[in-house]
Amino acid sequence: MAQLIEKTVVMDAQAIQRALTRIAHEIVEKNKGTKDLIIVGIRRRGVPLAERLSKIINDIEGVKVPIGILDITLYRDDLSHMSYQPLIQETQISEDITNKTLVLVDDVLYTGRTIRAALDALIDLGRPKKIQLAVLIDRGHRELPIRADYVGKNVPTATREAIEVRLLDTDDCEKVFIGEYTK
Ligand SMILES: O=P(O)(O)OC[C@H]1O[C@H](OP(=O)(O)OP(=O)(O)O)[C@H](O)[C@@H]1O
Ligand SMILES: O=c1cc[nH]c(=O)[nH]1
Image (spheres, rainbow, N blue to C red):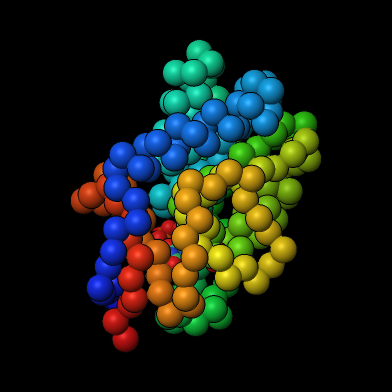
């Protein structure tokens, strides 16, 4: 597997926590509360981020916002080649999404192809009132007209670079790195 080399930390654990706290407040503010909200995490790392947002919103508002999961895998040869196809593997949303406000959550927004696939999957499930997008990192280079409503940090990148998000739920540390992949 390609390794990220010459990595630099762009967010540490405290910065990630602060960004999530801010996003949770923004979600509540933009939606004037938590009524009809469902937070939907994209596997893998969007899921722990969605759980953390739901927990912070519960701490702020005293309301448990339900969580759903979308499992989308990107098939590609190399991260630096933008020739991959997202494939929906599984959808776990127990609530009826009709007339609900869905907040999709992912760790990195790049070309926008994963989010496009997620939107297709959600629209197949029903007719939500609104779909919003929260990402920890927006690294630019969109290939589709997709933007995030809530961004932890905008990190301008070159296409040869990559962002690596590491969370304690899925990895051995809690950091966001920028670097370049070995060939
Ligand atoms: O905007 P895009 O170009 O679609 O790229 C963003 C996606 O790429 C990463 O997923 P990856 O396939 O690396 O899976 P991972 O979550 O298992 O790391 C990331 O988690 C996003 O889901
Ligand atoms: O740099 C990138 C691009 C897509 N997905 C990632 O996790 N990192």
